[in-house]
Length: 364
DNA sequence: TAGGCGTGGGC
DNA sequence: TGCCCAAGCCT
Image 1 (cartoon, helix red, strand yellow):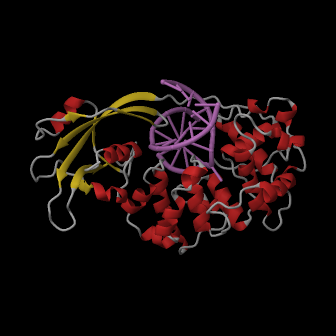
Image 2 (cartoon, rainbow, N blue to C red):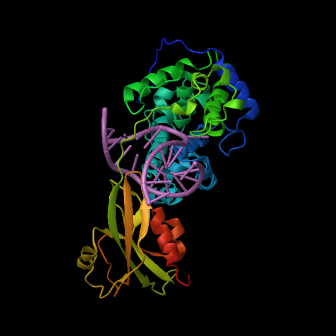
Image 3 (tube, rainbow, N blue to C red):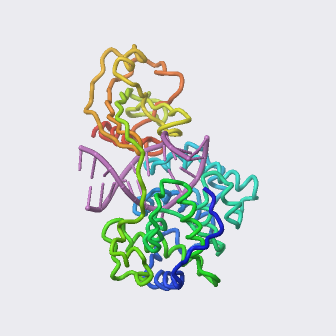
């Protein structure tokens, strides 16, 4: 959604300066992507942090940055390498778009990120909020993000009770967010303000049990004045989680003794380009056990392993692994590859499949 | 426009 | 167990 421009509501005054002062004194300053105005580093962190908690990203960001220290290194990398480093972080379209974005920055912008949010938002994987974050942090642009923190902080501050599942209401809140920005930002004000919104949402203005008694904007907060800050934000949920069972054909063989191929290997195939786990490698997936047997008739007998439950945003998966040694030298199917257990870290694999394979490691 | 798209954590 | 949420974007 685009960030709209104008709003004429009656708004509390002094919010932005209170927030900036609080951020400088009490906000977060030691995260690995802070302390740099390099748009590449900021961009990478913003993409990883989309719908993902800080503590999770801390385990990925340094490794990713070490392997791809700048936008050209990332643009030049094989897509499989990018997916391997993203493996386990989820929402894999982010990784595919990240790679495409790096290539566009190199091809269209000479390896230099554009400075304005409107231009940034034309790049793959960069929406209005991420574009605003990059522009505010790196270039001091007077533009508002709208993430989960801002939704919570501002709906409470303003006692904004419209249902944010309607995009028109979300758009209106974004206009209010824009109107709440520092009137005349100076120096690093936009960076401190933007960081302050997120820090306040993350550290004080929790979903449950907000710490209003030590909040720097409590005197301005209408939700607090009403005595019910947790009433906000109002979001009616709608996504259903369907239950599905998947059968995984876990084929293994003893690797040929040729160069570097020793050890037990597992057969992995690229996932379809659309849908769940697109861009990753996975064991063959079937809708039922009979389909596994029909697809791989060369296997005489399968060992059924303990089913594994795995939840996605919109699916409740029950994974049924079927384990068998692959007979002969022919490939099990037209597309795929044998991967040694020792090399699994270099391949992008869905989290539950990686976990399953780890439990089947030779000698383990 | 609404639904697809991962994973882990908190309650 | 189940639901909600986390620095959202894409189609």
